[in-house]
Amino acid sequence: MAPILTASLTPGSIGLPRTSEDITITHFAYKCLTKLAIHVWQRGTRSDYAPYKPWVPPTTFQTHGAHSLDIFQLDECFKSSGFQMQSLYEHRIAITTSLNSSNLPNTPPVLLAVEKITRHVRAMGKFFRRLQQLETRTFVLLPICTDIVLYYWSVVVKSTEVSSELINGDPLRVTAPWFLLK
Image (cartoon, helix red, strand yellow):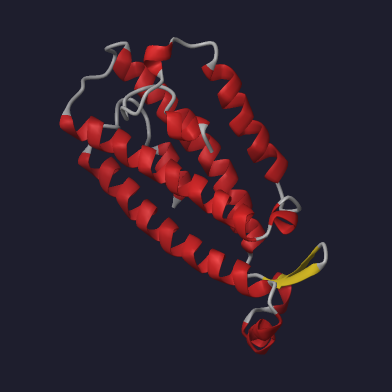
C-alpha cells in the first residue's frame, strides 16, 4: 500500500479526494499492523510465549542478541516502516514547501491531505519509539535501525539551518517540532 501512496503524493494530485482516502486507509491499516507487531515484540521476549511458536511459520524465526523472537516478519515490517517514514516525510517537506511558497493552493482537500500525512508519519515514529521502549537492546539490532536514527538526526541538523518561523506546531510548517523531539 505504501509504495502506491507515495506514488500518488505529487503536488498535482495532493488535492484530490482519492489521495486523502488512500492516506486514511493506509494509516488505519498501518496502525493495526503496528499494534500486532508491538504485541509480538512484547511476547517474543517472554517464556510464556513458547506455546504460540508453532503458529508462526518457521521462516520467520529470527535470533536477535540474547532473545529469540518469533516474529511475523517483524524485521521486514520495521525495515519497510523506516524506508516509508523517510519517503513520506520527504514528500511532506516538498508539499509544505510548495504550499508555503504559494505554488499550491491552500484548499481544504490539500490541507486535509497534509494533516493526514503528518498524522501517518507520527504513527510511524510512535511505532519506533514503542519498540525501543520495550526492548532497547533488541531494537538496536533491527535492520536499518542506525539509518533511522541517523535520518532523525539529519532532520534535526537541517532544522538548525531554516528560519524559526518554519518550525512550529502548524501542520503546514516544513519541520514540525514533534518530529525534532523524537
